[in-house]
Length: 232
Image (cartoon, rainbow, N blue to C red):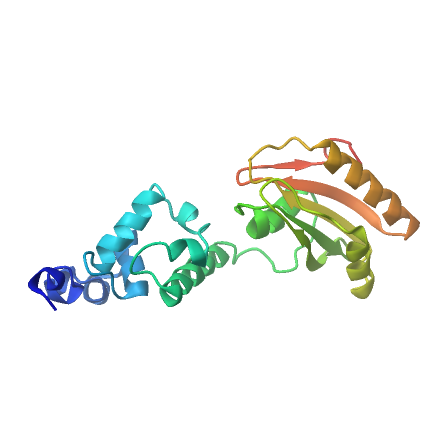
């Protein structure tokens, strides 16, 4: 390895400046986000150390881990020095952190309000860059017994086959249903299609003796409830 390349290696740094050693001897809280990420990827590229590479990635995301967590494996691999294995490690670690943040919330919670439903759904679709349509399936006491992805679409829409919703509801003996989809754009206003689809599913649910409790539109920062706005 040339002298220039070696100068970018973490191994050439003073031991106290190396992320792994720093964590061991000074504690995890002393490490920056870039240093923690550098431990995950282990090495950088020919012109950047792992820490410098991670600093650049974070800089591109305005130093916000929440924005970084939205990156796919493929997007991370556009950075020289980040291969598939390293990208998977980053995605997995950030997803684990996200789940840890929701660890105090029951896996199968009881829904008593639209905000309860939003909390469950935000953890699933709140920060996605594409639309997904989900159904929460509930028992007699309004406890969630299943979370079902109905469809996955593009940036502005997704196709919904309501037969799949009722098929899943029947298979798990659900009594009530809460519909949900996300708006990556951040807008909370339901579209005409949203309103029409909700009405169609509500009518079908009544025929099949299911209760449609709500339809929640989820964004990264807030939500819209059809039930709260008396649109059901």
